[in-house]
Length: 183
Image 1 (cartoon, rainbow, N blue to C red):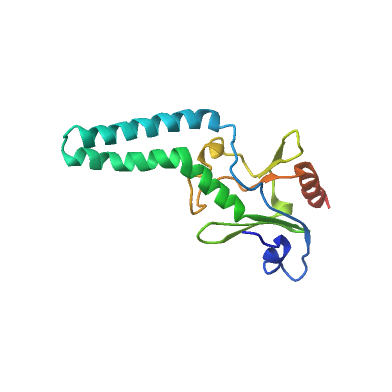
Image 2: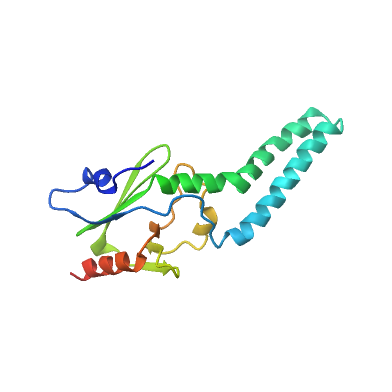
């Protein structure tokens, strides 16, 4: 889904606001540091669930045993594949805006949500920068397990700290937010 980022946010601006910066997160499948643990776990989970399911089907066990394995196979497939697809789709539908008063985050897969954060009242803000200059700005207290939850929340209802995720030139955007806070 290609869209003109600034046009998508203009209807959400107040009369006295203008967009200083707009952007969107990196597109496509992204591997995160938490995947070091999640990928092996998800492969083991899914492998065992498929083993259980096929063994129950082929061994002459009661049909209930195979039926019991179906949810575990589906969860395993989501662990292995679905979470990457959901995360990529969420990021493809997310746009960010920075005005002289607010940070605006528009996101969602099935329903659109608008998160509006008053820059002057933000107390905790931090950024992580990669060697290529891209990175993530986290707004508010950081949830220590938030990176483990990415891609598991299709309706974007996880109440983790808002973030401006995987953007290029993260330091420039962070510095602009700090500059607005000080003005």
